Length: 382
Image 1 (cartoon, rainbow, N blue to C red):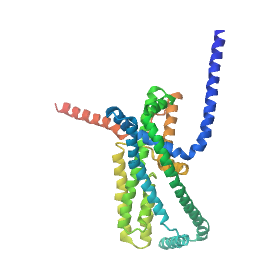
Image 2: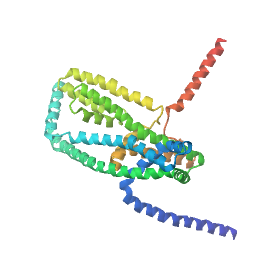
Image 3: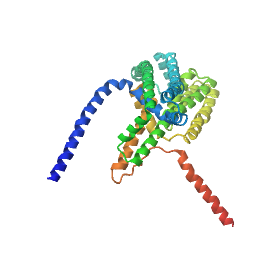
Image 4: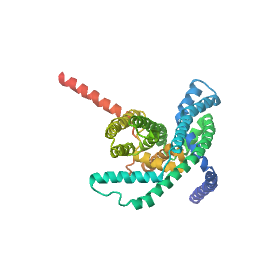
């Protein structure tokens, strides 16, 4: 009888949990569908909260600020250091694309001229399929340009609306920091040790994606823009922006922009500028990328480049401008949770409970090896 009673209580408990969770899930689906437009604001609030929570603790616990005053100060910091720079970048993008006129016929004739010039040098008629080029490829490019313009307009509206939502949510997250963090820790379905790993890994992922990706793109785009001005590239700002976006592409990176520009200068017969831009692109633009990554990765987590690329592609289609940050961030978090699930619940899994690598973690081991090598040399001398 006691066994039957235990089974009955266990069944009732499961039914109660299901009865409680089912309407909760249904309500989340109903409200989530309507609130999806503002999802970027909520994600932005979470991202900036993760970056500012340490400052909030310092202001409230060490400096004894009231939570409302501290949250207001950090809100102003978020506006000046996050939203205003991002808004300036978006305004620049709109200005670049709106002032860039795309003449399909001119593109067609320039393309055929370029193909003929290259074909004459290698002895092959490259423009033989110009009918297909004119009828299929160019209209596709025109539609793509129209789609980009439409997305820019929609993205501007989304940016400002979600910016307001972000600030509103962020304020209350900061004011209710302890309750919010306690709820997150309770809901994570992992052991205490792995909860700490998830939280620490999430911070690294957020910093790497929210700061690392945009900062690297801006640095490379700025150096590329200067180079394009020096070597006489028309619409230098436009190509500088494209170079910034191309910096997320693994292996090739910014070469997908400046190499075609070098080829166009060669075809035009401007060999000095072509050689100069080629050297500048290889040494300066490429060198800045390597140097900036080396410096930043000492402080930022190292995210796999494929996560960045596919995250940005998917993020832009889902979130618009915000997707540059949130796409790689959410994809990284999804892989992190998958790794944690494999590590905790699949016997014999080879998954590691982390997906990032920080260069600082390798430093102590290298330093220890160096110290041991020095000590060994001293012993041998004795």
